[in-house]
Length: 398
Image (cartoon, rainbow, N blue to C red; front, side, top):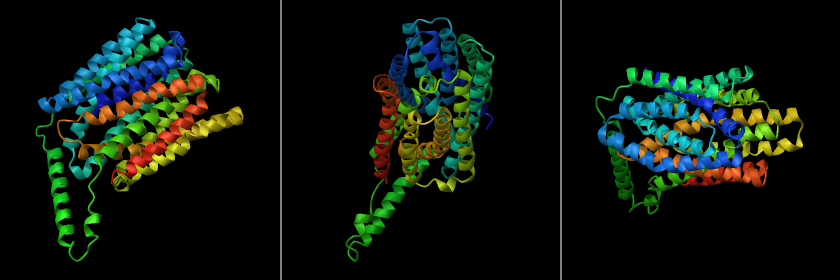
């Protein structure tokens, strides 16, 4: 899978940016946590219709490589423009455009994996992609730690991320090719339809002798899956969006230390992807995602205890949360990606990205607002509640 090389470099850049951008907005440009929340929420909301558009266009034209290259090239140019100003209004516009073009590669990437692997190996394919790109994300965070330790300015660090995006574009231009044939998702849809008909016919034949037989026939509730995806993404972004600022304000951590905490988060996620790749049989139906929603609901409550502990106790709690959140997310990510490719029909490849974007946008907005006006602990409690509601939605899926 040489086509992954460009995506790894892309993730190196965004691993660096994941911590750098909120600090750049709140420190270099004199913004605050609410401004950062408004930026991320606005950008994500505006990117939602584009996620549908990119998904429709890549399926309609079957030019998946084109949209990947367009995404990487546009983000590179926009990030460079980001370094040329500290005006908050201009930064908000540029950030919105970055997110709009950033989502352009997501539907194409999902289709490439689905059409490269057979249906039985989809989870393995998604795990391989996510594992390699998560490795890139870890490298980006480690790079951020090194650069922050060397006291390099935020603008210089942004320029370094521009360089890695450029490498991602060049590598993708060389290695990414469109699939010769597009048929795997169509076969899966046919298999599911035949399976439903067959199961219904068998149960109907038992109806005379077994009156309760038809009650066993239950199709997957795609709407419940969609609601669960939105709520899970909402709870996740509500927790993570203000988290770097929480580390600065509540724990008084330095930038390089914050990078290391997120390295631990991504490293545990990377280990989770490695395990998933070897144990895809662990991911059956919606059961894993229900369990993970419950686990995350408990984990996000741990930082609430930070105020009642010593500095080192609060730091240990933060490490526990980030390691646990990262590890279980690997299982969630692969489960929902493979389920979405089964449930979402061809021509709507952008729906998954749009659903996740909707939840993320709402969480990006209300998380910082709650943190700024009521306190971080209320943000974490609210996030836990939304994880519980997402558990209920996933339970209704099948």
